Every structure is written in structure tokens, then in C-alpha cells.
Image (tube, rainbow, N blue to C red):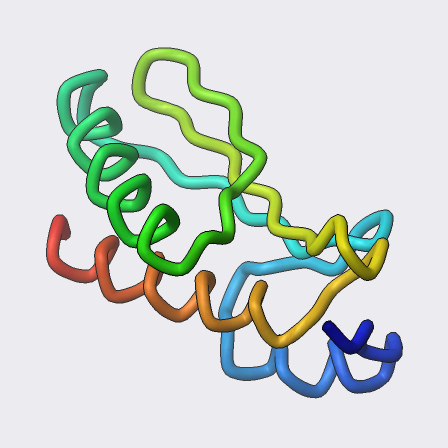
Length: 96
């Protein structure tokens, strides 16, 4: 898996509003109407992540979800992270 260079990451992030490049990963915060909505989205993301064999680092408290994507095999951001981010954005769009 090829580690993307910082400029490549920043260029791709232009297509991912509110995602940020921080400490060798891309991250985004989400806010849902309640805990159940947050868990529904997390479960949908989990199914896609498992199919892609690429799993997010995430943190959830009630209606808040923080997602961080990084590829441990290359110690940074790869195309796998952007593929999962795109899938996450599609899931989010269905829930709003």
C-alpha cells in the first residue's frame, strides 16, 4: 500500500468537506440527532469497513462521532482511507 504524500492528501481532501489531515490520518466529526442515529450510522459504516477490510479509529459519545482514518500498513494515509471516507460520506448522506 502506497503512502500518499501530504500534498496528494490535501488535494484529495478538497473533495471531502470538513475532513482534516492530522497526524498521518484524515479525521472528521459528526453530530447526530441522538444516540440511536449515531449508532445506526456506525453500524452501517462497520459493515462497509469490514467489506473493505479497512477499519476506522472512532470515538462516540451520545450523538457525537469522531472518525479517524489511517493505513497502519504504510504508517500514513493511502487511497484506502479515501475509499472508506467516500463510503462514509454516502452513508451519512442517506441518514440526513
